[in-house]
Length: 49
Image (cartoon, rainbow, N blue to C red):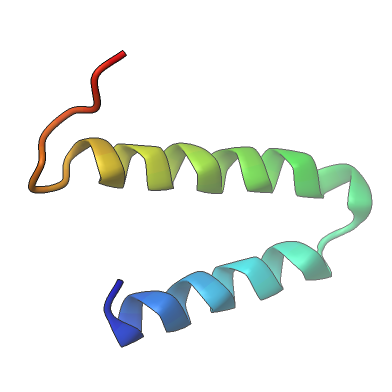
């Protein structure tokens, strides 16, 4: 993970943590999905199931 990517992730996590508790689960799920897509699209290709 590049330093800029790390800072962006930390920033996104801070925004999520500032949200009301009832909204955090959805925000974390969206972040999870975005990170999973990035991993799947990485240089190694899709993960095996």
